[in-house]
Amino acid sequence: MQPQTGETYWWLLPYVNTELFNRILKDFAEHFQVGPHKRVILPSEQAGWHTTEKLQVPEGIHLLHLPAYSPELQPAERLWPLTNEPLVNQAFESMDEMEEVVYQRCRQLFQQQELIRGLTSYHWLPTKKVA
Image (tube, rainbow, N blue to C red; front, side, top):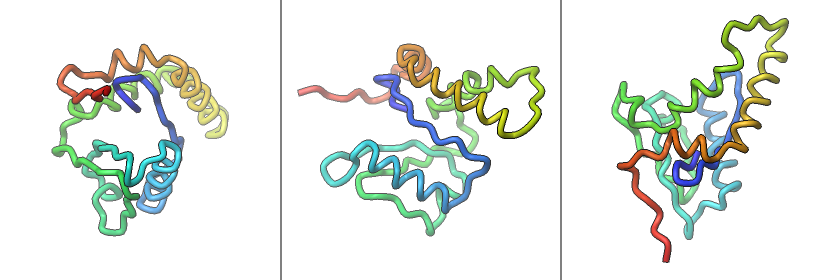
């Protein structure tokens, strides 16, 4: 998620671990062409798969480990209510059915960049300098 633009990037997973997080970081770097000439800072919580020595962080990605128990510092935390909204008070016949609902919701949110920007672009975040 890019707070200044409202652009989102989603991976929907049934669980997380170091192997999957390595794949996400690699895909993220490729998708956004991150490398020696384009660098990004990714705020992350201190989950084990974010801090392990087995993590393979691609060149150009810098993980910024936030203090423990500080969700207010992570703009992406504000997106959880939006992704959970279609799941509230619903019963699903299968995990596949539930995953499809979440997938469709993420597709909708992908198109709602102003909403995302409004929720995540905190006034204290650094802004991109335009030459």
